[in-house]
View 1 (cartoon, rainbow, N blue to C red):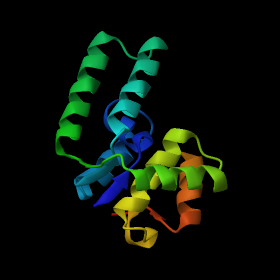
View 2: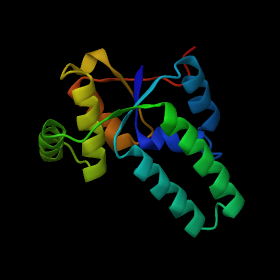
View 3: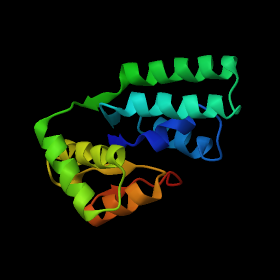
View 4: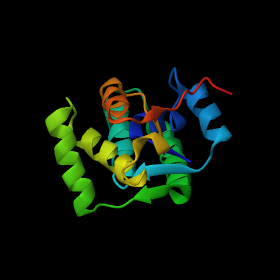
Length: 144
């Protein structure tokens, strides 16, 4: 099981340059572990694409259906005081946005505070760098 950041989930919902790589990674290890707020972040990304004219109503409906399918099967790290405390610490030591700090904190708690025990799947460079510095391995979507 790997921890999936919303940035890596969105290509599973809509066609992007990284879609095939993310799909292959998801096929190899279909058990997804995510932060409780990942579904909201994905909907936010889809809404941005719709507002920008990159997705029409049919595309939004298809992507939303895919998101529901994924969300029905993934495992979520629920909000908690320890996730919040960890996110606050990560904000102080890494140049992250709040949602990214919460993603990293959820992964940290999922790993039982032992980052080397969990791989993180992300396409966000800032989050990837912070995860590396915290000791997480980053999943290689090109590995077989």
